[in-house]
Image (cartoon, rainbow, N blue to C red; front, side, top):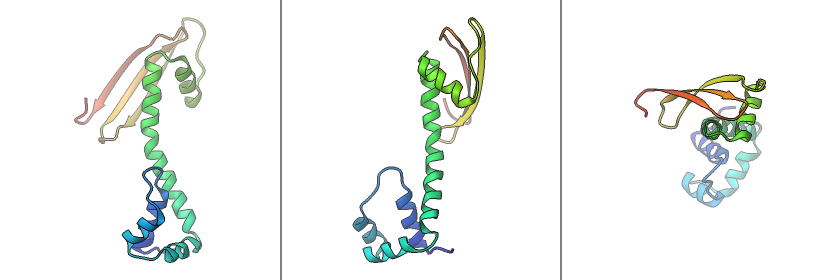
Length: 136
């Protein structure tokens, strides 16, 4: 279905995972009545579009979550290390073995970073990182 600009704006508003406004404020901002907003919500496909937008926002936010997890793992947080291995589908090796883990993520300012961590079972870390763009 084709949505009007105001309907798309309302869908983006509903899809926000944070900093939500109340319906009255959004109604005033879009210059439509609250009843019209409710009418849009009843249209076929409306909520599917909202959910798709919310998933896209969650995926963008996931970068920060991965960054936090890697930071904790690099600092030796055993729970973070185990979770990282689990999410990457790897199991740590035997005593004294190291599991190299490398992944790339994009930080909020648009730069990308590649982080490599050789994570031994005993919890100490050897890490390296490289930044692309104008980042640190």
